[in-house]
Length: 419
Image 1 (tube, rainbow, N blue to C red):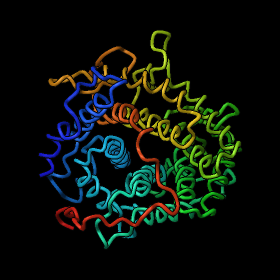
Image 2 (cartoon, rainbow, N blue to C red):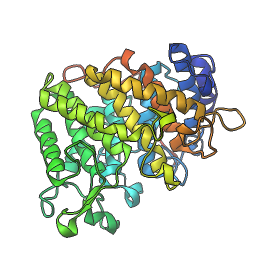
Image 3 (tube, rainbow, N blue to C red):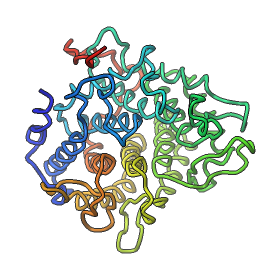
């Protein structure tokens, strides 16, 4: 049944529009292109067909479990921004299948690849659902907001003061030894954003105090410099004295949106406003790779050198997601966000002109066309950038007092075979 909805999704929301023909001035064009890109993203998913615990909710190799969480977060954005509910049932099925035995997205089947940063990306998807009152039809599973709080409860006890004066390690399990000696900005930024969003969603200042604590630690340890450039992390062997100054777009975006949420939560506190603006300004380094590609996003650590791995090919999408969301929380940033991302959206559309149907996405947006490098991440990055053009007209995230324990229609998606 779902495969039929995938094949018709583009016609349900808008007439088919090729991404290369994106018209920024026409909402119908934006919806049409977004639908085409969403269809392309979902073409990588087969879990609804095989429907087993090993395949449900995840995307086939070489994509890791964390990127599936990122993809469902993107599809929740798509549903909310475009109004197309075609994929809502499969999104719900995917999220509910991964909650784990304690409803905290600690999923034993994926412990081999689950780190703090991976769990954080699933928390972003769950928060998307909670903040939009996305129906949760299974009465045996807690509401989305409760699940997000459960995730936070598993992360807060991992705060590690033994080395570096605090912070989360990259990994959770000793079976992943490399990540047990490294504290990274994505894990800590993820915990920061989760704390900030839970503060706003619940009104509980405990989350706010922890968000401030994570920010202060990140700043003190040097994960961000005085100009708000966010760096990758540091090893614990020298007490985090030597910062790895490799930088990626998604780390910048994760901290940015967390700061913007706190600006909103504190009713415009100037400190959080300055931090948000600083992070946004520093994000300029991910745009304009050369003079004839002004305001076009690129992953500066790897794209120019042809060394992006599959994870890195999706990173631009999260910067786009969180920049659009930042503009919703702090409207004074909208002009800057729109200037960068509208140009990038057009460039992404031109890059999504490959394949037999002329809608498959390539990696580099600054080439002026399709570069032949395809994958899930390439579809996701383009989708987040394009459908975000509709974000400012969509209902902003609900906050404390507005979030409901939505139970929907009572139609529960089927559990994976074998469960």
